[in-house]
Amino acid sequence: MRHLAHLTSVLAIALAACAQTPSATPDRAAAYTGHFESGCQQLGEAFYTRDVADLIPAGGGKVNARYAKAIHDADGCGPASLVVVFHLPTVQWTFDGTTQYQGRTVDRIQTQPTGNGQLTASSARPGWLSETPTQFMLHHNGGAKGLPVDKAVEQLPSKELRYLDGDRLYTSALDSDPNTYPSALSPDDYLERKPAP
Image 1 (cartoon, helix red, strand yellow):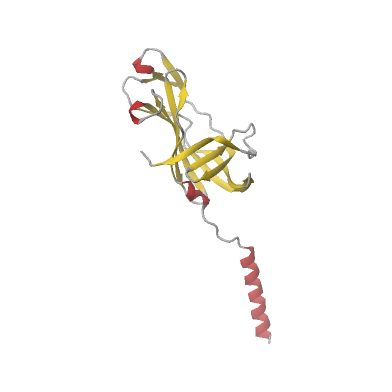
Image 2 (tube, rainbow, N blue to C red):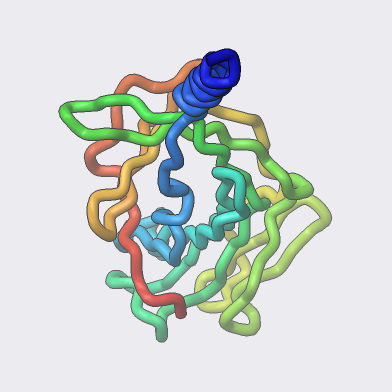
């Protein structure tokens, strides 16, 4: 009887420990893997732009996000119109649970810059891009007058929302307080998953 009482006690402790251990959940970060692009938008009088993001899971509920802006000289942003790609410093996402927004389960993301705070550029056409120590100059058709682009990028940790709807990646509108999660997604601010170029 004593042994039975001891065994019952051990089982009770083991069951309590199991009850306190969170059940395994799929790594939500893995769902975000891929290459994402925005639609083509006009930038000034002569240029058009696409936002690009390459998302690579880093394990432990984290994602390395590599953002870029592709600049084109024609509406539609086709491959032949590409002028330059500006690469922003890498940012790491940490998944911080979920919240509900309009009946959808939305991911809460803490972002942490990991790069050096400097923009880099990959020119697609000779003569269209020049640079100074602090700026890139984007020249339309190689013209003398250039559109300045600062090399220094402000890097601040922030709290944001992300939501995947099929291949569409929605994000929250920028909030004035980077230490507080936004309360809403931006319905028009999304990227679409596409094959990597």
